Image (cartoon, rainbow, N blue to C red; front, top):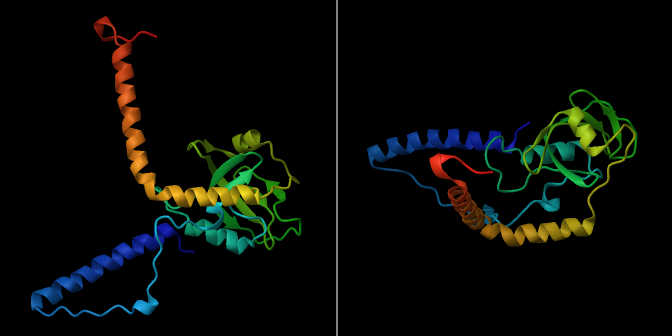
Length: 212
């Protein structure tokens, strides 16, 4: 049941424990080192992204979908990899919670089985899954009622995977741009802030008030 967040926290804990041991070795004057076995090393660059850029596929099992969700769950920390996403109609949503349900509806994968007050149940190749705590790409949160109203989904509807060509184009674009993403976020953010300050000075009139 580990997530990217929980594993990251465990790494910090182990690093702190290892640092204590290192300090003791340094104090005694003989830190012991071990040469890395280069045959067992692995390296993943920032530009490498998961397949399907985080979109789940209804052709996968419930276990594979839930595993993908956990692998891309960073909690409230910035996620510079990709977000776990679902394509519904013409909209993209990020579920904040994914659970495997014990039932297996036998419906075609991607079929909406049930809509409760807290979640949406959908069939997969194996067991059904529950998705909830939806947000859109702008960060807007949706309760289930608002989510159903926004998407227009209903029980029995069949959700489709995104077009394969579109996914491949997104994959290529994400890979190409990820190297420069951090730089341009800072640049564009600075430009936007400067624009707001400039606009505020134009709107200011006598007495420190603003004109509409």
